[in-house]
Each structure stands twice: as structure tokens, then as C-alpha cells.
Amino acid sequence: MTEQGKYLAGVFFTILYILIASTQSVMLNIWLHGVNVFLVVGMSFMVVTMVFATVGFVRQRSAYSMLFTQWRLLVALNIVSMFNWLFYFLAVKYLEPSVAVTLTQGLGPVSMTIYLLSKGQPVSLVTRSCHMVIFITAIAMCVYTVTFRNVYTPYTREEMIVGIIIATLCSISITATVVISKRFAVGKIPASALLSLRFPLLIAVCLGILYFQHGVVVNSSILFAILLIALIGVSASIYFLQKGIELATPLAVSTVLALSPLAVFIIQMFNSQTSFSLTLFMLIMIIVSVSIISIIYDARQLGRRAREGEISLSKQ
Image 1: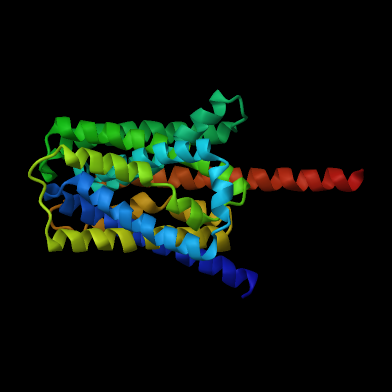
Image 2: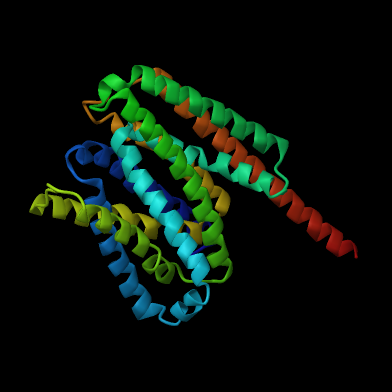
């Protein structure tokens, strides 16, 4: 395959990831109204763990000895992964899918900027300005959602505010996951082996909460839906994203992922219970556009610094 072919294939796989993840967000918002969240999360990730454990055991058995030497990082990854997915499922339950995804993913760069600045690492003025615009727009979107969009959900304004807090915490936990996962990537830990050991704490917490709950409904239709979520919504989407990262450039992947809130907004329009909002659309477009500007600017800065480094080496 040519370099251009690899690039286009990577973009295609990333778009597949967005389509699956966005559709899942909309469907979960509808379906989770009458289903126990902890049952769905716990059983879904039991299946996901078994899938990746099988792949890891067959193809990457030697990687497990490397993983267990970094058990502290593995425990940390389990903790942040637990918050990632619990907060995500709760956010899409209590908020419009487009709002939930915009907050969980759109605020991620803002959290990362705050983290980098707290570590004393440089962040360009353009990037900081872009992320400030994202932060202010996100606040405006939250106020608008609670004030005007509550009539389109079965939840009270108080529950929507809780959903907003959960979605914001989810974005912070995603940032922590990126930081920890990067440590494993540097150590060349295979993705399948890592994913097979990433969710035991999440499963244990969900099953532990379920043990103390009464009246949990479990039937064949719920189990079938959980199987679809596990195999397509989580396992397949993670695989497609990993292939996209492998084949395309980081800029291409980041730019396509920045379109996620817009994709969810478009897909949720097919739900007859959700009314189109020009204001919400404009707020999401601002966040998406500014995110793409920030990504492209940072990529060009990295390229410029790399070229300057090559020139300085050639002069020596």
C-alpha cells in the first residue's frame, strides 16, 4: 500500500470509529432510560475484556510480563478507565448526546492545557486562546442546555446539572488516561494486551454496586443489546481507532476526532424526540472549529521545530 493509501485508510478507519461511537451515544441516550447503567457497563466490559484477553493471549503473550512490571501504572490506568466509562455512560443518559460528547471530548484539550501549564511545560498563546474560547463556549452551552433544552428530556434540571458535572469529570479522567496510556505506548506495550487488563476495576465496581441494588431487570433483549455494545460499540470502535492511529498522521486523526460532537449532533436529529436547535448547533460548531484550528496550528509548530532541528544539525 502506498503512503497516500495508508493515510486515506487511516482517515477512513477513524471516520468509522466516529460513526460507531456517535451512533452509540445517541442510542444509549434513548435506551438507558429504563435500564440499569451499572449492569450495562459491567457486563459490556466483561465481554470486552474477554475479547482482548483472547487476542492478547494468542498473539502477544510475552507482553504480560512487561505489563506486570509496571503494576502501579496499570492500577492507575484501571482507576481512570473506571471513571472514563462510568462517567461517559451516565453523561449520555442524563444529557443530550451532542452536549455530553462535546463536554467529554471538547473539554479534553482544555484539561490537557491546564495539566501542561501546572507542570511548567510551554503552551503557545494561540493554543491557550483557542482553549479559552472552547471553555467559555462550553459554559454557554451548559447554561443554554439547562435553561432551554430540559423540555426535550425526561430528566429535571437538577439531574441535567449533575450530568454536566459528570461529563466534565469524564473529560478530566480522559486527559489522565491519555497521559498514562502514553507511558505504556513509549514502552511499546501491545494494545490488545493492555486493553485486556484495563477494565477489571471497572467491572468489579459495577458488579459490587449491582449486588446492593434490588429490582434489576435482566432479560434476553437487554443481554443482546449489551452484547452489541460490547462487540461493536466498544471493541470494534477501539480497533478502528487504533488502526486509524496506526495508518494516518496524528494531525489527521486528531482533526477527524474533533468532528465527533458535530457527528453526534447530526445523528441525534434522526431521533424524532429531539428538536433541532440553531443555537446549540452554532455553539458546537464554534468548539469544533476552534479545536481544529488549535490542532492544525500545533502540528505546524511541531513541524517547524523539527525542521529547525534538522537545519541546526546539518550546520554542525
